[in-house]
Image (cartoon, rainbow, N blue to C red; front, side, top):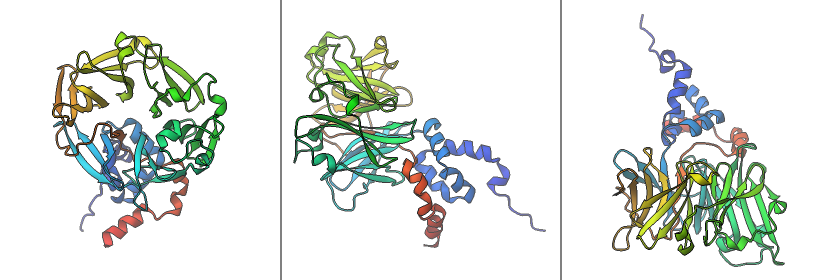
Length: 386
């Protein structure tokens, strides 16, 4: 009699398959749903997606940036040859819309589109949700101006205690009263947080773009005059504000502009040092421990750190020669700067580059709505038939 051919499920235990799939890069694992019903069920499980995002050793550093009003670029960093692979992605807008990338969180990107709406979007899966803030615009003091002027503070983050993506905004009404609001994607509702605002806080004194770290959004002052000028923190779970001090360095008082970055899960503050013609990057190795600030001096003018490579080198961009912006790798131990290959898109330095980590996580509202959509297995079958 002819022997029945064994499938991979007969050879490998399910637990081992589960472990192997956790090591597959997110950009590849979505396609593996079509292998079998078991794999489809496993990969579609929200708990598996969460485990993959938290523990996968194959997390990919990617930069996302826009070049025009209809498309964006994903630049995937390749560790082995210090190169990158470009991929064009199209945000989920029905019509041509002028948009900007405002931040990222857990594989999702926050986009602003004209005239008055935000979109939370996963470039890998296409999952997205639109958020209108027209109700704020109708009460806002500054009409007909850009988002950055309309919102004195804004940030995009995740509250793990509620499994909820949140967008926070601070704005000024027609009577010059300040408001602090939070949009919940899980409940699709606006939460007023005016009570959380410290009375002494001057919202006009901060850079508007917030950086997410450890479940909190961080803002930097417009100008760091001394180390006592503090970094503003808003805890998304506790809904409270706090502050931490910048590093103690005299040259900060002469610094015209400084910014925040996230390097290897640590908060970083960087600024140009005109005297030495390089960039100073301070990394807080232990969160909220002032003595843990550690200085790196990058031999490059206006270097913008973006993320860390797997071996701890700093990936960023800056001016090298002829006023041309290059993507670079700073070798921490060797004190060298190497160029990243295969990045033909040279952007003006003022253009925003957002660091993005790929994931196939669903938005909280998507999980309960998946039953109302065509199943992935049905889509896979349709592809095979076509």
